[in-house]
Length: 325
Image (tube, rainbow, N blue to C red):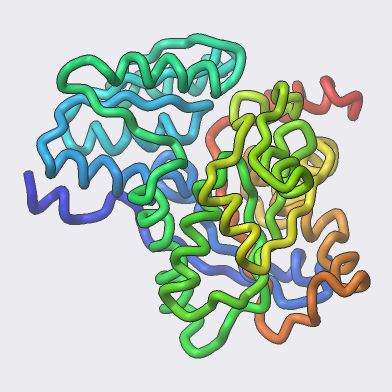
């Protein structure tokens, strides 16, 4: 069992050029395709790593709060480890996600309006003897796992340095992991464009306020996936590094999902659409014209974070909610 635990649960994902995105951005665009990870998102990197480390220390029961992707990663990791998992999701979580979690052998409880409510319940359950809490994004081991993404990019790019990164931000775990990995490979000065949807913009709100902020509610259509408060480490990264915070409308994110499906034949969820909207909605060119982003000497690398909380029927429902029919 220990030899199996030493092998990571994530896969090395492709780094693929996109002609369509390059044309739209006016610069060379490469996509890091985290959407093809087991269970459909980058989350398996950090959460898989966390679960392996805790299992090696003797932990035998895991509890995770999630709006979808973190729970799927936790269920997958626990199934591989042969350990029980309880996943707490908000009441708004779709039946398809609940079924996917149960198919991986996880016990599922639905409680609360948004992820923060589910998380509070998960923390209470994790106090039971023998149980351990899986943080969806706020833990050094999770960031350490996500940093593996950058070491893969370094291996692919060699001596070439990225011109900039584009990443979607929810709770901030991916941003924290990205910065950690960039430091390790010597890319600390590469700009990061941090994309959020309005109504789930906890990082941008904190930067505007000059300190931690808790949003009153998640009003973006990515409601189940949003965190009201960004993790402290992500906020620290955004302050200390070359991080440019951009907030887009839900409609921009949804249009980006549709265009990406047409251009690259892959369906990703709305939170990932926020990252893609950096190109499709013209923010790269705008930032360069404003002088916020320099002329890129290397490729623009978009982290296509993926996500399983999407289907064609959900896409139609979102369009209806936003009056985009």
